[in-house]
Length: 364
Image (cartoon, rainbow, N blue to C red; front, side, top):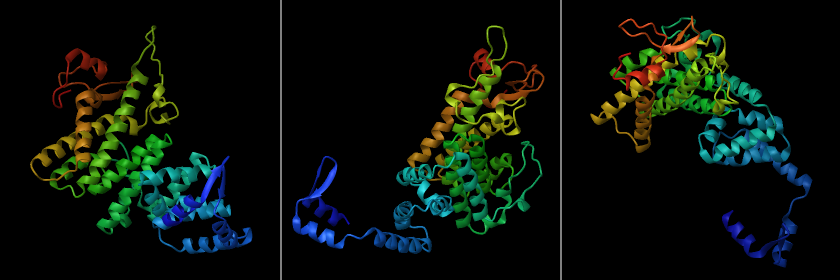
């Protein structure tokens, strides 16, 4: 193919946007071998049938969507982009991800329609059903998702890592389209699967015993730390910033416009929002554990993984007060957690940090 490109460059030129050939013999050969419209459609149809039976590979990713586009087979293209193996291979590649998003745009589907179909196909692909759903509540105030309890994903180490790879990139797509709550839920679900638990707050004790997948865990921790701090800052501003008359503004920060924040702007923020401070503290704790264990020679981390740990620990130095926030029902505000000395708990964590300086350790 590259050799053919070199030949065409030598015997052709472009004039006013029109490609022309100045080598007459080459032009004659080209005209003799060029397909008619009907012949081209026939060949494209044969290629479509061929690719449909082919497992996901580089050639299928590069050529099959193009064939479907040329045939005008929008239904086939939609079926392809929600295929989980195809989605994972395309979306995990930074270059192919752009092409994948172009195909999505080509379909003209709304983001909600696409995400719903992709979510349904994800659950179908991993044989996830509500029969694995648990209504058992943990002290986190949330229920275990059926993703984490489905035995299908624990059949082998390879199947488990494949599942968390899919859920990691699926959460990235939801995040890109502004559905952060679902993206966070998926990241938490994947993290719990990596530790084999349905309670996120049991992870630190499990980590002390054994962390089987440190490299994948760090990817999840980095994303969660960023999303937790992003929304905690916004939540604090929404529920605490006041106007000149001391009325709470309830103003969504400009940088979150277009992102679904209904889960923490409702009259009473949802449980997934109220537990963010404790979950952020858990992320900080795990990052410190990774730092200590790596220095002791337990893990060999890549430079990018060290950068994740350092970014999380920098967030802890900068945003440690965010881990003290609790929802105060009477005043309808996020305030600092009452201290052991018996404070009233009506001072916000940010104000407290300004008064007392940097918080040390886990004292509140």
